[in-house]
Image 1 (cartoon, rainbow, N blue to C red):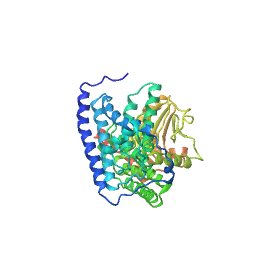
Image 2: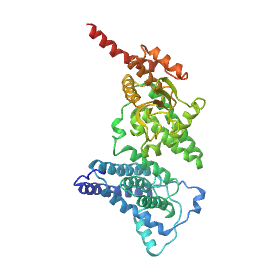
Image 3: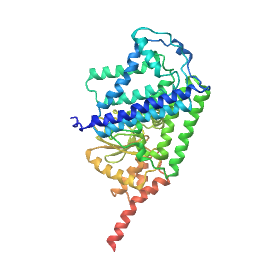
Image 4: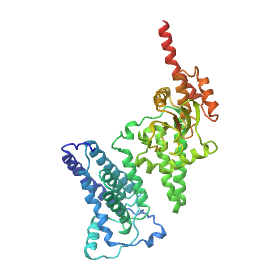
Length: 445
């Protein structure tokens, strides 16, 4: 059942439009004017683009984004949703205009004279728009934001089909109106999804969770992912052509590096049902594919879960088929999407290759104790060797089934020999025993 719509939202929407409208024309017009004064404006166009057709009628869907821009402010049902939508549009404008000023590009095709109604629409467009400021396409970035908002409020198979079809046509129209070269489209999409990621509607912004990491391991991993991002960028820029697709993994690895350095698990935007946000899925797609392949390779000789004690199993993130034997699943991965309908599912997201602290161990132990009541419980992470093993050890200590950290680790290793628990994990587990020791001392006194 849809929640009641807050009152007075149309006034808030009008105020946002009164801010965003003039700002758009002023900033975009200024970038166009300034770029026209420069003599160092280059272009980035592929040879195959010369075969791109010019469809005069596609100016209609191209122009329709202006109408949809305004109508999108009628959709939000809460002030928060309204403000987040407006912030996404504002951020898209800031990002794209900044890129236009820093590295402007020029559209190189000469459009022939067009007559009739479509020709008039082109003439009106070119009275304001100029063949500069291409990548990332602001048109595409705004389309992503608007598309996401309309998709949130469109119900029914037919209406959703019409929506997605028209939005896709708008995206195609930037090419068939000869307004943009191809490179502008994927870069614009990345910019748009970045804005959606920055301003989620249900959750806090990643900016709210920005805290510089204190653990040296997180900084080491951030540097590694940052180096991978830099290598992808260098290859893309220096080799060009199809190598430019490496800008996608470049952005993906850079975002992962930022998650390790500051945003933490919140940067992956994993929901309580195990899914990742649409923005995180698109932005992190190359990394997510690599993480999944890595998990399959490392566990290919031992894909099955292992029983540590009766009712508690330890393993990798399962497929739906692999999870049939379990009634409940505790997922500790922050980076992998999990869909297990029909299971009692809980997610306690932890960063890969980083030892959880004592508080996370305590939370995990309590969750395991709750979930094991549902029936066979699988505790899992990407591989089932470190994060999940640490929290199963925490539960063994918490429940009294193990008297020491070493005994807990030995019990797990007997069931799953390839677990990796180093000094950092042992220290976190040892922290679980300290409160108990203090409590015993207090009772003794």
